[in-house]
Length: 192
Image 1 (cartoon, rainbow, N blue to C red):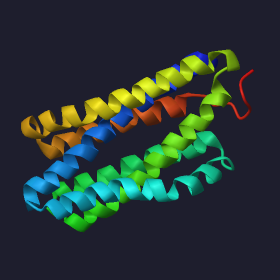
Image 2 (image 1 turned 135 degrees about the horizontal axis):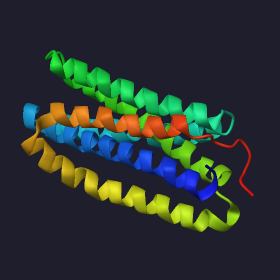
Image 3 (image 1 turned 90 degrees about the horizontal axis):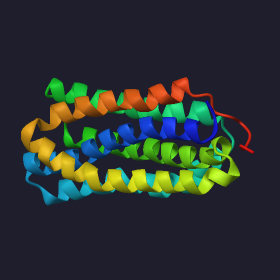
């Protein structure tokens, strides 16, 4: 599998993983507010889930260019899965504290930035020049849909199935992202 088909295959897995992460990210903020009734804690979670990716983004961008893309993407996806598993473990055993969430969402922001920068920079390696517009349009559409659908679905899910099931859904969603990356053969030179 190569070219646009490879891109769509990986995009499928990444979109499911991104949706799971979006569910968790939004639901965690709301859950923190519901359990603490603190607007400040809610705000700090939002900042912790955004600021590290913004601050470290330029450094991650230059770092991505020097690494094997597949290893980077698999590592970032696995790292994201592990921190959510850790969060679920802490929640399940009633050990979860505010500072755990702040640290975990900060790490999640770094892994998400690694995934986004790594994947977008890999598009030119996978997709022939004549198909780049299609690939970039599909990527933009998926990212936009996830940004819209994630919070909407998370609000409904938090009311009906609770934070523990949302965490489980996110963990399962990572298997799609990891699975497609592990099955794919990513080229190391640009597609022609």
